[in-house]
Image 1 (cartoon, one colour):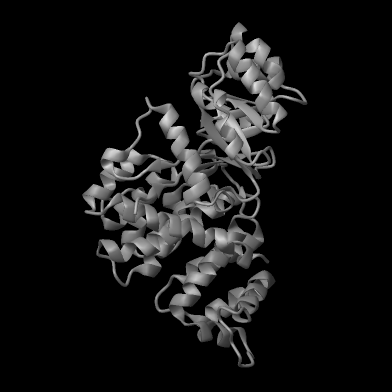
Image 2 (image 1 turned 45 degrees about the vertical axis):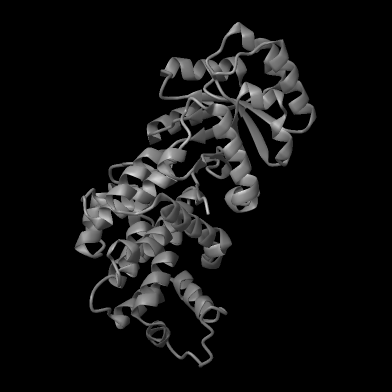
Length: 409
């Protein structure tokens, strides 16, 4: 059975809520990889995968799906196989705009679809098209500050939305916000905002203390109970979890310490790390927690196949803690130094070229749609890409099945 790769890059609105995802699927297998020169075939594969292999609802939920379109696919009206309420037709910058393309975009709009122009660079040929355009995507890596502002001044307003793409730092994101951009795409949400003297809110301090205590060996249930008593939301999460169908505790619980011991150390570490991370992520883009959970589940499922049996909890925590820098607005090495996870887990997160480190880099490659890097790492680990792709899809499905909702306070 042929497997497919799944890459999806989130697109945020000004409230840092997810507006949509750009879909980055590719076929698996070395000789079956599509090259960037074959845009027609690659885009058709994206559409096929999102309709017939990976259900679109699982991939984007109720959000928008941005899909690249070539001139041929636009004129063939291939977009009509996609739901208009979900799809955003993203016209590639390589498409030559002429009267035929303008009429095709007019028909697309009349059918109820949104139209985006990728890597917009401006030119007189685009003027007849502007009345049909919904979103202009501006490449921030290819634009200086003056040029970035120019696009907002020239095209911004109530009708055309401006999307800043390749936003790689918090400084770029803040500039885009200040200029008035509507949407944002890039890896800025994985970058920490370094602010000297920034004080962590009291409730986050409690959760961070909880994570620190949680990963000490041996586990001190009395100390954990003391911390939970200082943070009411932790106690409510614990009781809700114990009463859930997945645990089904039938005995009367008389103390928090009893509740903790009832779970057992490994299930407790896993659940409590999830609960703590969801709280530490308060005020951050929801996609950040999604990213952590997908990484965690992938690493957990992947470990036994690469010679890491019995390390499921460590691999899970490695993925889960991989974005602690963004959650805490501090460099990752400083945050990790305060959390006593296994030494090789910390080393992997900081770049060690070990089995754990390669596992971490592999999930990052899939996450970012970097198929060449995924193939290189998989070969180095003596793994097949179809197998690794399936593991990644299982991780994504696990998260989409409601893991975040189950952690709600």
